[in-house]
Length: 259
Length: 330
Ligand SMILES: Cc1cc2nc3c(=O)[nH]c(=O)nc-3n(C[C@H](O)[C@H](O)[C@H](O)COP(=O)(O)OP(=O)(O)OC[C@H]3O[C@@H](n4cnc5c(N)ncnc54)[C@H](O)[C@@H]3O)c2cc1C
Ligand SMILES: Nc1ncnc2c1ncn2[C@@H]1O[C@H](COP(=O)(O)O)[C@@H](O)[C@H]1O
Image (cartoon, rainbow over all chains, first blue to last red; front, top):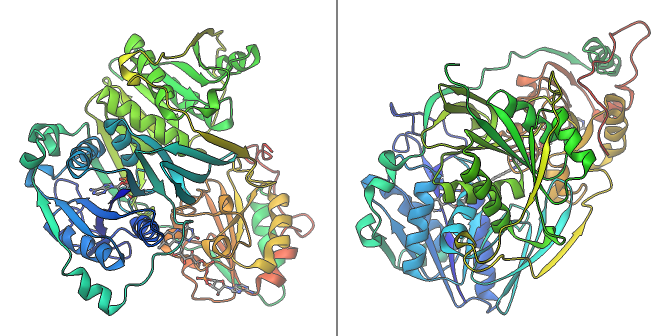
């Protein structure tokens, strides 16, 4: 079984984020990293390789030149090789554009199972995996809190708002995993050094046969017209509990009509 | 508003509160039609009509639930192609996201996931999303109609339509031979469903969350007094002290109305789920806990001492409980 893991290079969540004049995240000005939520997919793929269920694990990213750093981090955790789709025309792509590029790259690389994170920690859309599945005509099982593969069947557990589901689908399939699947291992020094020797292939839109007009700004189906910081909350009353803390809290809740 | 759009579609899996919120939001865009996955009983149709639906599409087959998202998405696509709506609204959530994503690909339409507000101006739909772990509000315009928007539950309120209409209902189900179905209507090979916990109660717009295992009994008592749900931080769900669906945060639920955090530090990923709550109350023994910075009211103290007595007010204090805090559904 060949697994391709989709990994995104994102701004560090705790950094001070800036926006470029075109209202995209200023990725050059902010420190980046492999999306923490994609590390769970990397870990699952690595476990499937260790258990013998997968014989090849490839990491795939669509992103700027610096996104190679994210691929190196993934390769330090596991995997055999990586593919980096990088092209200036991709800048400004919406989820539709990104999913098109990912799907074309997946067709070129070949796959039985595509693993992804549940959401990117920057855009937080949780739609790219289903979009990729739709474009590939592959089955889909999203938001897996647990994952197992048996022959050509992949089974997951997922929690919806009203139920806990166990779903099995046949390969080829796209599966997104949540942070319930288990922390990614911390790569040892030797693994980090070893990752530098694993091959990373770069591809352009031309290599994938994607028309530049379908992606980036020209192909975008929506545009951000305003980004503003969430209004800062002014800190309210903070009291020290001298024995009356509970009563003061109850009075506050009652004052707002909650109790 | 210079031009009134023809209609807005609403997909819905039964009439849960988020569905009624969708219909309320859709009325501001045009004339809503509702799409129900499964049976649309007379009672369901009547309730959808009360919230403004003028048409109800029942998309179903007897074993509806076993199907993966493709046939559901294809049904919505067919309805959209026939009725040319200005927007397609879906409730955010695992299935809503799957369906919306496929619909956007098939219609090559702009998609705005997890919107908290949606509006239309001159036929162009805009929506507001909270991005980057809740730190920014982004407003986006959809350039290719129809706008596919998934709405966060509890972000808007559900209000019955001023003049209640009657809705006509129509059943449909795509067939595998249609081009959009790729010759198949994939289903899950093994599908088991069970309630995920005795009390998920996530229709509730408020929560009392606690990081400490010992606090859960007092949390529940306080939550009951507030008519709110019990929540948890990831520290708690990772330790299996509480089921995952109670987790609040970036990879958990979002709280809209009132949030009481006891023994939670306030990491950015946790804040993502609660910082837009209208009222925030914090109890923590560490005066430097970051969550105090966004608290409307805070008590520096031991939660074991503060929480149990926190819902008993002193005589004479307070106002009447507002309607907004409706009791939980389950
Ligand atoms: C990609 C990603 C996604 C994440 N998603 C989420 C998410 O959705 N939700 C989430 O919660 N976290 C999430 N996290 C984890 C998050 O970063 C924090 O680790 C977590 O929120 C910390 O939980 P905590 O505040 O309960 O625990 P701690 O950081 O351990 O804080 C415990 C607090 O309790 C106080 N305390 C202890 N005992 C008492 C007492 N007796 N009385 C009063 N106060 C007491 C302490 O002073 C302290 O402030 C995510 C992390 C990552 C990387
Ligand atoms: N540019 C990208 N490159 C590689 N994978 C991506 C990219 N964008 C999204 N993904 C994958 O899709 C998942 C969901 O992303 P999103 O829909 O943006 O929240 C992520 O966790 C990644 O696994």
